[in-house]
Length: 336
Image 1 (cartoon, helix red, strand yellow):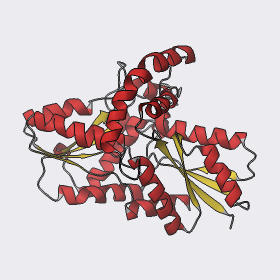
Image 2: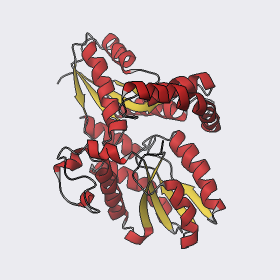
Image 3: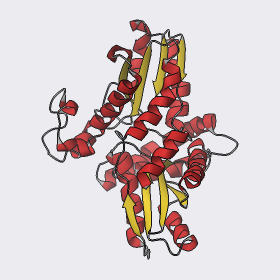
């Protein structure tokens, strides 16, 4: 059997909550052509002249609200997940980040140094769904470092697993105790993307967003369609938990800029729900497998405040998969 090493890839985090570190992180993140997909010069002017300078202090304050004694929640959780996957798989396991540290180059160098006999590195993107601004950019970033390096090992990439039974079961089981209690509605809040990203990813060139039910019509476009994939995850989880259609819905969070994004926006539905008689709300964020700024601050803090101020009575932000045993087993199954 060939010598395998697992490499987990997550989003990343600033090195600290200091404005300088947050600014540096934002610049790297937003200069990614798969995140803000406009020509390089206007992107540079937008990011370095407007967004990063003004957003860094505000983002720093948000990071401070969730930062732990151990550091960034996303980094700490990914470190712990890395150790747990190694324990369960019996294979050396490492981690890298798309933005910030540790970089793919640093991780690949460490793998080569500590395992000179490695034949294959299996890259496991910690993104269940395909999106150019998450899964795709993380994979291409690692591939780029691998192609430029002196590595003798092969690189294998795990495909999106949004509909993989183990992932669906792990996600559903984290939700199950909450839907067995008293609640009015379960909201699946996914990270948003601009509609143009969906159109760019349409490998048929003539399917995505062409009809209201395009995500339900079978098409090769679904291979790279984030919208279809999040709807499919939602459908499978709801089916597993036997939740009636009127008791759950999908929304999209974390918008940036004024372009047309996938909707409805999470912030908007949180304000409207209480007027519709939904006062006991559960929120799950399946696009994220590790709790981070977007789940802990945007949903658990800001989202809760929005919902309660609008007249809601109870708001439960269900944790991400994090270190869930079934989730760990799913990673191991997919890697093997």
